[in-house]
Structures are given as structure tokens and as C-alpha cells.
Image (tube, helix red, strand yellow):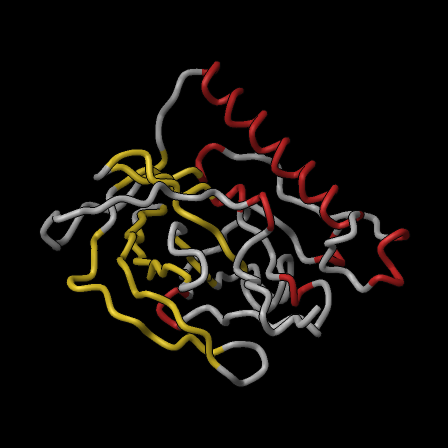
Length: 217
């Protein structure tokens, strides 16, 4: 399989895919997203969903479509995650780019991949506001894709950054669950070609949620 042609912005069936819709909402600033308060039963449901997400990754790594080199798939110890934390599940609105524009995003082999620059998703953490660029892959236009860096890279998480997706709940309601942040495939095998997070998505705090570096299992 030609790994240059494989979209490595997705974890097979693991991504949180937003619902595609036509939207004529005017562009404009939106309030920063914050963690959603919920009753214990709802948090327990989120935790169960996270456990299923983690189990799917374990299955993918051991299966025929694994991002791992074929020689080590059978001996792989799996992948580690931070413990689930509902405070890393953000809910807010998406500020659309009007009009959306096509951009070329650098990848890990010094080339570029085409994406639609679709919007900005501001989040607030301990009083600090950071705004994330949201892109839509040309090959998967139903996704709201975010590639990001944070201060855990090179220590606890993959040094090349991680990926996460927005889930579109309604026209003005999106969920960004960092518990489901995952490594690009090139974290497991350098022969994969993966988009590099934009500098604008270098978060000024540690995101201790989601997938750990492969060696941190």
C-alpha cells in the first residue's frame, strides 16, 4: 500500500466525526469553550465511551491495518492513555472562516497536503484562552480536524504533536474531547506521512488527556 496516499489524519473508525451541513451563519467572534458540567450518570457514560475508544485503538494496533511495522505487531504492548478526565471535554461554538479557503499544510516528509481552513475554536483553561485552527481534509470533508502541540510533547506524549476532532452536536454547539486525542500514524512507524500541526495550534499549557507516546505504555 502506498502510504503517501493514506490519510493519516484519521484513526480508522476511531475518529469523532462532525456532521456535515450547509451553514450560512455569519462569521464572528465566539466565547471560549469550557468544560461541560454534567451529572454523575452522564460522566459515567462519557467514561464508557472513552474506554471503547481505547479498546478500538488496541484492536487496530494488533490488526491487519495497524500503523505498526508488520514485524512487531504481534509483540506490541498496545498504547497508553492518560486517565479519563471530564474537565478535558470542551463544549462551545465554532467561529467559521468566511469564506473557507484551501491551504497547503506541511507534512512530515517536507511536502504538503490540501485542507480546507474552516474555522477557529477558542478554549479556556485556568483563565488562559487559546484558539485552535480547525481544518477539513479534502479526502474527508465531513471531519473537523485539529492537529495540535502542547507542553507534554517530547516528555509524555509524541513529540510531533497529536490529533483530535470536533463533534458537531448542533449548528452552534461543538464538542472537543481531548480524552480522545490520538497520535498520528507516523508516531508508530516513520514510513507514514502525516500533517504537521500549525504553529497557531501550539497550546500554552499541558494537555494531560488522550494518547501517550508509544514508549509510555
